[in-house]
Amino acid sequence: QVLEEREHRGEMPLLSPEEAAALLERGDRSIGALTHPWYSPGDPDPAGVKLKILREALLVLTHIEAIFVDYASLFQHPPKWTRTEAENEAFKRSLNLMGDVYASAVGTTVLQIKEIPPRPQEFDGELCLFGLKAGVDEAEVCQALSGDLSTEFESCNLAFESTYGVVRFTTHAAALRAKAANTFSELCGGVDTRYNERSYDGRVDGDGGRDGDEGRGWCCFEGGVSGELLVRLSVYPRMKAELDKLPPKLISLASGRAPEPLELSHSDVWQRVQQVVESIEMATFTGKGDKEVVPALYKGYVERVATVLASTLA
Image (cartoon, rainbow, N blue to C red; front, side, top):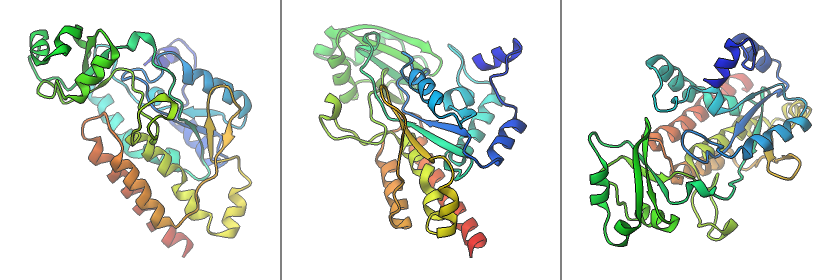
């Protein structure tokens, strides 16, 4: 929405569909596709950490002329409001095609940010209640609390955003206990901390001073499709030789260091598919229904790729 407002002022931060298609068809990986963990719902980068990383990287990666960022490129819910019906339909269409953006063997360079900065103080003690049931009020929130949690409750704003409310505790430890105890399971469809410290694709206990987890479902999907087609094409020597002439397909970005190209695993294709499917299914999703939808998106993409390659390269 902000980018559209800039266009209305005569600035042109967005490519037209024709311009974007032409750049993709050039086949020189001049479109960057950012894959990254959202730090909070409604604002994936509240302190501007990823924006700084990205801006510094683009000064080095001069072959990139345009960039796809999900938050800016897909319709989001406006503050205190929801997408229009037309915007919602466009959003759904985009989700179904988003894997192709990351997967393109020659059209895009995938820029991967896995970094999870320390939690900003203003997010301490806050839980998001997603999919609140109709009529839920503060009295019911307080009634759901028991024991010491009732004494550590500070406030709640059930209309914080159109898609979720926020409950605040006096300490972040209390918020985590409330989440672990499923305190609000009868009031809403899901609960998570407002600042999401879950890893990109999984970590062990103690890594970075945080608890272990299985990662985020959408990140596992994006990371998986980013190399799917390239891994399959690279088994053909002449094809691999041509692809190797292009800039790196997958580049890791982080604070305080130069961009680092990542080597793609060339293990058995079907073993790789199973590993990616398992990582997606084990990961955590915040959005309702994504747990079923995203693995199906990946499997559907794999089937399409396999069918096309079988007919093209046979």
